[in-house]
Length: 406
Image (cartoon, rainbow, N blue to C red; front, top):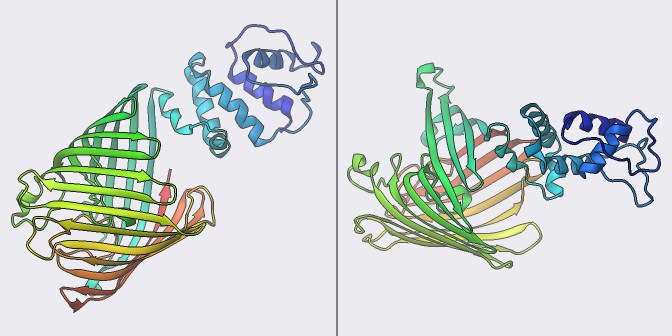
C-alpha cells in the first residue's frame, strides 16, 4: 500500500482527535489532497518523516511501519470514540506479530471496548484407552476477561465437552470451570475464586484438574524468581487415595510453589498438604537444564511424607524444539520415563493417555509431540508404552488431537 493512502486511512480513523496543524514536510504542499491528514497526524506524533525533512508519500509502506503507527495510536486510545477503538482493535489483531516485535503487548486490548476481552481454544481428539477402549471427543473453552481497573480483573472460563462416539447430545455438558478475581499490588497478586492448580512438568502430569480449586492465592514474581501460596478446596475427584470419594471432592489443601531461573537451569519446588496433615503431604522439586540450542533435560521428584510405603514419584526425560502457535512448521518432541507409586498420585493428571488413569503403582515411557500446522492450529500426540501397573504388563495407550486457539 502506498504510504500516502495508508496515512489517509489512519487520518479517517482518528478524525476529530486534533485540530489543524502546520505541515512539517517539505514534499507535502497545501495543494496535495492528503495535506491535512499528514499535518494532523504529524502533530499528534503518529507519523514521522525522514531526517531530510521529507515524507515520501509515494513509496510503499511495510507492515512494520504501519505497526509503528498502530502502536502510537494505541497510546492515544482514550481520545478515540467507541467506533474508532473497535477499528483500532481489529488493526492491532491483524498486526499482532509486528506489534510484538515492537514490544507492544496486544493483550492490553482487553482494556478497550467495554473493558472485556474474549479468547478461547478448541480440541478434536481420538483416544485409544487401556484394554482396547477408545474415545472420540471434542472440547471448547471460552475465556472472558473483564478489566475492572489498571490493577484488577475478573476472569471466567466456559467449558463444553462432548463424546462424539456415543452420538448422544444429552451427554454434552457445559460448565464454568474457572471464575476468579485478580488484584495486583506491585510485584504481588492476590487471586480469589475457582482457579487453576498444576504440579509437575509434562503439562502438570502429577496434578492438573481442569476445575482446579476454590480458594485464595497469593503470588509474587520479580526478575528470575516467582512464588505462590494458596489454600482452598480441590474440585473434581482428585485425592483418590482417600477412602471416601465424596470426601475427596471437598478436600481442603494448602500448597506452595517456588521457581528460580538461573539461566543455565530452571529450578522449581512444590509443597501440598491436606488441612488435616495426616493424609497427604507432598514435597517435590523439578529441574530443567538446556544442554543445546533446542534440547532440554527435565526431571521431577515427589514424595508423600506421611504415606507408609509406595510414596514416591519421579520422571526424567528430554525435550527438543518448540512448537510456536503463530509459526507454522515449528514442532517439539519430548520423551520421558515415569515411575509413579500409588500413594503419591491422587488423580487429575494433565497427561491424555490412560497410563495414570488409576491410583496404583505405575511405570511407563511417555512420548509427546506437537507440530504447528497453521497459525493457531496444532496437532498433538501422546504415546505411553512399556507400561506396568502393579508389576503387571498393561496395554500401550495413545491419543492424537487437533487443537485450535482463537
